[in-house]
Length: 243
Ligand code: TMP
Ligand code: ASP
Image (cartoon, rainbow, N blue to C red; front, side):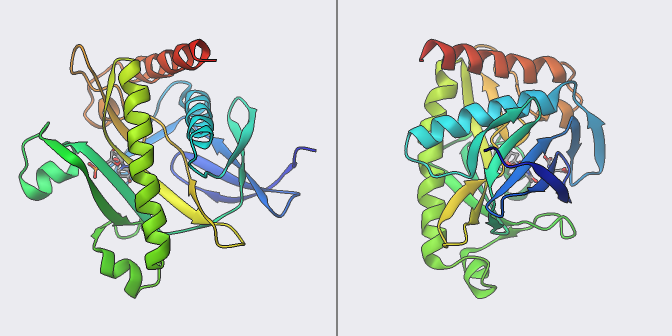
């Protein structure tokens, strides 16, 4: 039996998390709301909740099928997915294949510079502090994660990068960077959590070099709704063709 939605646990910038009548499950509800620069910029992207739920469900299912343990259980409805209940580790893992966004400003690095192997950075998940960049030693000192847990997070992030770089490449997109979150189950297993969507990654069209992700919203480039829809259509065609 599918667990039933009960009460909201937490409303974030782009999702609402609900508890269910099963102690082991939660429901992620995807909103159309979009924010950037720690919510200084606010707006909505047409059908984003619907699109992101579909995209994240398809990508998490793909990752599960390729050995990455995630919180994803199954797609429930247009804007809802069923997930395993986790204790979220307050560390965001950012993987960068090329320079874009904050690293360009922070370290005066030319946009587009390639990182081979991919660069991995950690940010402390705190809206109040604006998600600051942190070092590994902060993670252990403040007991946000153990060295063993961090090892799993890094290994899985590299695996996600390898798998999804190939998927996006097949649909004419280059995976520039992305952010992942992890959480622990009651038995302490560390699983990939949150979502993988155009909100939390950068995708550049391989032919035109155009961004096809939330940078269109952040930088007022126009064509935001269209870019989200285009990425989801290409992914849908790819997964249908590979069934
Ligand atoms: P950054 O260049 O702003 O550090 O972002 C790196 C990647 O992480 C980019 O694809 C966007 C994603 N990201 C989030 O999903 N949420 C966030 O709060 C931040 C800061 C970045
Ligand atoms: N998601 C973050 C915010 O709301 C940062 C970003 O994506 O730019 O503000």
